[in-house]
Amino acid sequence: MKPTMTPPLDPIDPIDPIAQWLARRPHLILDGALATELERRGADLRDALWSARLLIEQPELIRAVHLDYFRAGADVATSASYQATFEGFARRGLDTEAAAALMRRSVELAQEARAQWLQERPASDARPTPLVAASVGPYGAMKADGSEYRGDYGLDEEALMAFHRPRLEVLKAAGADLMACETLPCLAEARALARLMDELGLRGWISFSCRDGEHTSQGEPIGDCAAALAPFASVVAIGVNCTAPQHIASLVRAIRARSDRPVLVYPNAGEVWDAQAKVWRAGPECAHRAFDAQAMDWAGAGARLIGGCCRTSPADIAALWRRWEQQG
Image (tube, rainbow, N blue to C red; front, side):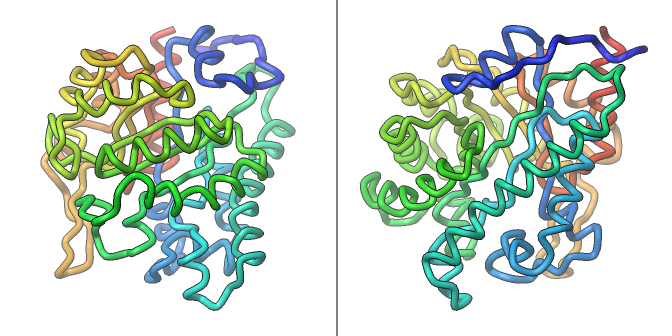
């Protein structure tokens, strides 16, 4: 079928770009994995900076991945700033000014890819101008010790706000359309980021990592976390990422039962990381159903922003786009 002819949405609503999109379209397609896609293309990410390492060494590869996601049908590109922090860059010998420049560059690379896609898209493709979301990873991502999937930081909200504030200020100045506060293991960090976004006049989504179909990685009920974010006007969507796909539908239902914000999901492809062999192995969801087929279940449960996290690819996003286009 021909692409749905949706009128362009320019300029992007600075108050709530997600609400503007969802007022015109039933769903919004997020991009897929960045880091594991970079690895698939030959990048060596064995570094505490992870994908942020390539902001220094191979920025053109990051831009190319963003562009391929736009070409695949993604409505949002998420910047390579997940693990980009002043503390992390300082360990590599970079001063504050150099670190801030690399954080800004992460947003610029996604913006450049968007500009290229807008120039090359066919006349038949009337998708609205895609969004650029600045990735804000958890405190544990800076530590690179696995605590991003546990939440056992030993820090209160005020300390977490102090950690996140400088880079949120930089990402705001870079001109991202919204913040992607993602892979958050606990409510305390979600509240810290929501308070900061309110304070700084930002908009963004809050996305948790979860250990099962009911709880965050730290063990808090996901519905309680969603309800606790209700007072924050800056939070334009709430959801889950970097979580096994078999847990997603129940998590979506739990969030919707306690919150009226749009629900977003971008789970892993379903593969399981074998830390001993240092390889990805097929998980329970990989052998049976394609990623786009599973995404229909998540949409049926009420998710309106859907994409992928680790081990998903532009091919997965393209398949999701085709499926939705076929449904009219």
